[in-house]
Length: 509
Image (cartoon, rainbow, N blue to C red; front, side):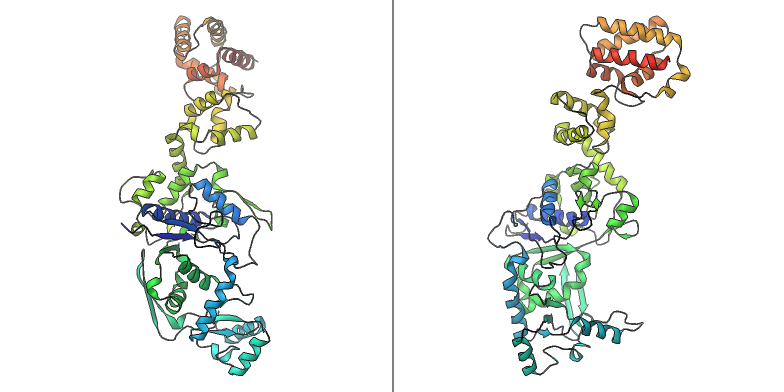
């Protein structure tokens, strides 16, 4: 067991919807923190103002709240290590960048966008289609390493537009131990001189993530595998600024795969499944992307399915509550390879959680679905009983409308094709007489309705099985639903009789 000073963070950019890969990153951070009695922090990485989208930050917190993973520290609940938005920490980053320059680990670069483009075009070959600003190029560019000192002083004094780049060392092997992948090594000469501070004074991710993790005392950093290629730059920054003994332990999480590689929003659009936690409407294009919540998923199922996308506890168990996940989670059991997302399996998890939980847990969400279709519920207790009665037949929350709406309103259509081929006058007589008998039942209970039905069927010499399907269609409209006498008991005497009589007029038309 680790000490209780564990501090982990999720650091999203407020640029769009929260992808399920991002939620899984949150989940693994959250589980690790809670298991070890630590803190889960959310830090908003909003340094790229050109990509900032209005409403995206609030959306992130709404998603985390729905998932049951609210942070211990964030812009909404600040702790001792704020501010929790990078844009509000802007002043501190330049000091660290200047410190790197003073110690010979970084440099000013005055190249214009046009000069950078010219360099790329000049050096571009078939073998090297995307030339980098690196140790082979830097002395031919316009920076504080290639220019005379007095020229650099003049350019800075005149506030010439510039960035600050890391000076990657030549021929160095940079290594670290990843909690998932084990020992990982990089050759420094193959890495370009990344920009650390942009011309607008904002840091890039590379500088900000290191400085912020240090200042916020982050002990473990879990992030997507796509950031593994940036590790050598970050390791050097830790070494140059704070010492490697201060660096958090890292774990790079495997990708979530779709039908054709890394799971993307395009996969969702093409194959008809959500990839965002909740509905996201792009503020710039007004494009709506459906979320798991609005599709009809329970947060318990969503969290469960994400947890096992790349992790298992070593057993055959598939259903885990949040408390069970906290107890059993181990970062060492996260798989190295990517995990393929299967929407059918995701729906299975949801179906299992719908069955597992009492209907009171999701009643309010189902009620909203009913009200959106102009079906308003007045008796909550009755509504809950109905939901518990039909929940085994529901995969997504909207399924409850089809499986339960007939308890609250009579069908307007009937599957007559299922009835008419075997419909005859004796069945009409049976149901007419059955209505008369139902009128006489004083204690309206399932058993009494069933006894009356079967006794009359025996008297008329008709098999009960030949009568139950027509009765079901009379009450429901189709060939579905729980036991037919249970339906009659739930909808009441008057409604049952009215529905039978209405259906008889349709069947006999």
